[in-house]
Amino acid sequence: MLAWLVLRPAGIVTLILGAITLPTPLPTGILLIGLGTALLIATSATVRIQVRRLRARFPRLDRALEGIEPRLVRWLAVPLRRTRPIRRRATRATE
Image (tube, rainbow, N blue to C red; front, top):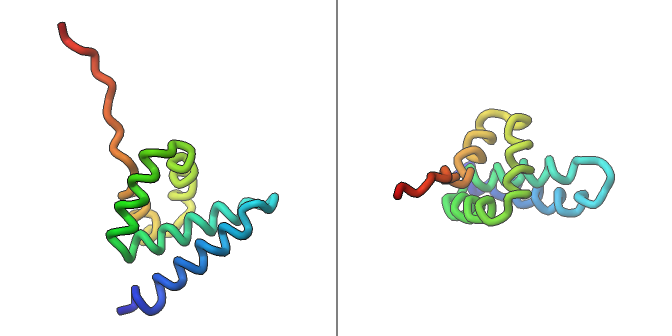
């Protein structure tokens, strides 16, 4: 119940504020986007799946979110960490 009433709307508002402040010279936009994304990931399985797909497709976004993870409190960092894309090791083909 708390997720629907408080965390999801807070995540959406934070994400929008981050998008608005992104072009400013201060790095607050990236932090707000990371915080909003983490709030939405913590409350929605659908958002988790979509973020994992986006992180796999856009390495720059993945690096930005990895940079934000250590700055977040644990209950926000853990769900964000769980959306990391699975990286496959390059193995040599055996002949």
